[in-house]
Image (cartoon, rainbow, N blue to C red; front, side, top):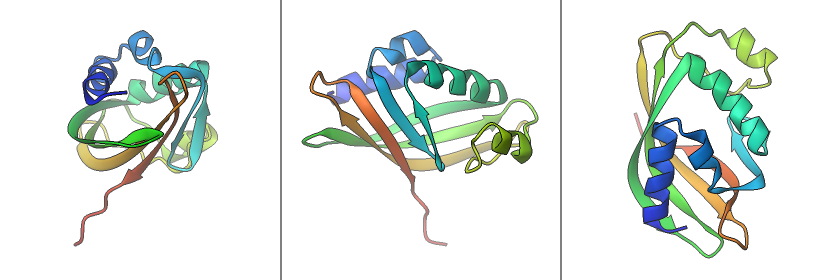
Length: 135
């Protein structure tokens, strides 16, 4: 995947165009995030149908670092609370590492996201790391 491809991927994500987004994924891809894993396209759609009902995500591109088996992207994701969501509901759904964002509040978070690609150039694994600035 090139940087130009990744920018198309982000445009699809920001537009909530899941069908376009899934064209970048292997059927059995894995998204690891906040202590849980989403496995495969159906689980991906289910997770984001739930999460985006409660929280809007807007991804701002910073940098692209190509590698031998994939790439790392530096992005800032702004999470904006849309509906009330409790930690209890997140825990019950299997997302205990996530934190609810209060309605009307926007929280920008910087990430370095590692994307591993399969032999066909499709994303097979995604894992993010949060950048924690010094106080």
